[in-house]
Image 1 (cartoon, rainbow, N blue to C red):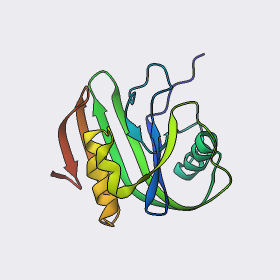
Image 2 (image 1 turned 90 degrees about the vertical axis):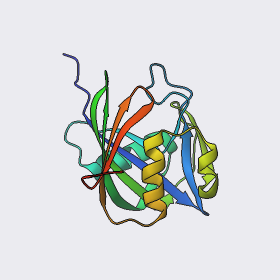
Image 3 (image 1 turned 30 degrees about the vertical axis):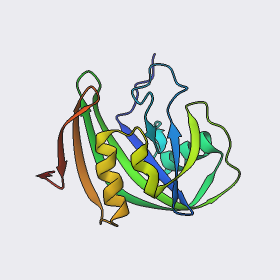
Length: 159
């Protein structure tokens, strides 16, 4: 029996020296994020809490063990043909271990001031701005058709 993929995910922006650890998604086949720059994370496994998933994915993708992290928001993605994904958004500013290569993409420390030069999802720019502004916990809904953001709703109000 094939294991059903969870609609719950985590995404984390690990911070160091005014930079985020970003992943350029260039290595995975059939990747909805192909060519984009995103944080680290992935789908929950059976029985995992958001924190369990966050810590496992960080270790698997980067080799780092997160020691201090913050749950910043819930992002609901919908995309025609893809379905709905509920993403627990984190930042982390404490970690141990050595960064290693990832089989899903190229990891790179990118200055926060230079994020706009990267190929990002349009909706990611919205929540990255919220993170930069120190926004309190938020709920953001992003509706896409392909790569095009059709609707963004922050805490129940269109953006």
